Amino acid sequence: MNAEVKPTVVLIYGDPGQGKSHLAGKLREEFGYRRITVDDVYVRFIRDRYPDLYFPRLRQFISNHWHAITIDGRLDDLGTAWRNHLYDVIENELRSFPRIVVEGYLVGFALNELKAKLEKRVAVRIIKAENQKYPMDDKEVTVAEIADN
Image (cartoon, rainbow, N blue to C red):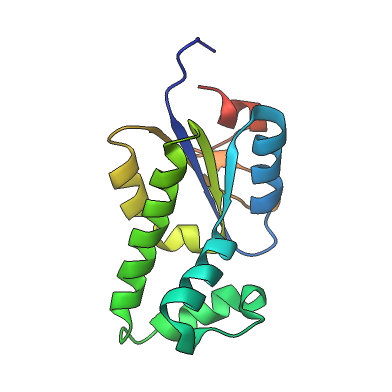
């Protein structure tokens, strides 16, 4: 890797239990990536901005919660506000950390927007976790290959 590291954001999405957190943990532990756990960001976002939609065990029901509040389009403003908030969180972290891994089920619902905004100034890698396997550009890759600039 060269001395000048281009800022990198790895976006990991996939269904629950597919290895998103495992991969993010490896990138943090082995390669020094700053980790953003989208579930935590989402719970704080709902609690602080939409308290009527918050309940204490929300973290355990994020996918159901998201689908229930977005299914009929009545809360499109919430979806837009959520994607903007997640982007702002990532940008804020990039001020201090050049390598960030963002993992969570809800990344998939903001993927295109995040990629379009971020790739203007940072390298963006997109990984869909599937059964503890990590394809990138239709090829299964190792954690080192994901981390390598």
